[in-house]
Image 1 (spheres, rainbow, N blue to C red):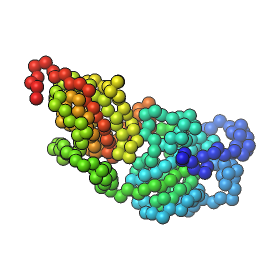
Image 2: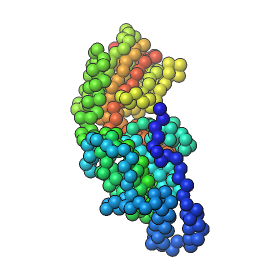
Image 3: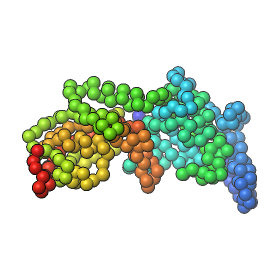
Image 4: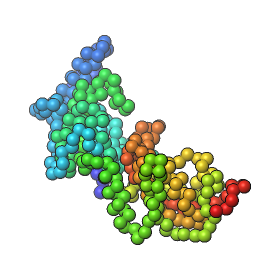
Length: 324
């Protein structure tokens, strides 16, 4: 089933917005831009939400579905589905709901679509104020002018003096990210009969690996030329990268730059073996995750555990290196 908020369908903004745009004189300063934005915003509200009044915190807030869980604190991490618009045009500039991105023609093959990890308070005052009015399980629409958004400077895909609208589903409030991710790892490991751990003493972090097909092949060592097939995915199953046995990746171990957990795990394997790595965020992409530099979209979420299905296709020991 495709995810859809009730207001995904475009609004027909009153003709007065167009008339205002035509009649506006060239801006002469920040105050003129604010005044113009306010006129557009007022027309938008009157056309789409007649009679609606703002909350005491200044935002316009509609509760589409009441939540029943926790109310977020200012420094909580949140798991959300969200759609972000600029108004009065109702143009979507960000979402990690895949069918919405596809329908609006900005799908990114490297983005990680699905529930999004958002640090409460990290975006703008208006969004934070709205989210703090919600409970887990709730859905809401909120909109406001740029004085509660990104103001005169804008941010990324949002230009200066641009009013914003958000549609948010608050799936979960995360109080302790380390405990949250470890609980997911523990639940995954409960589904397998046996696993081993690898310790990184430099940061005192552990990763896990499961041997699915052992062999007596040539062992992987530093400076070995190896050919690897793999599938990388989040612990909830969302795939972010894959190389098949017909088109593997080939590199010399130690000369290529990979996440720490990848190298640590590969050194435990032999030619022909298949294994699974469970790599916590400390040995993967860390607290920040990974961003597609071309689009600014998240390829790996922050604080994310990664799972890799690995097959060692071939191992060529470096000249002069002893076979282990």
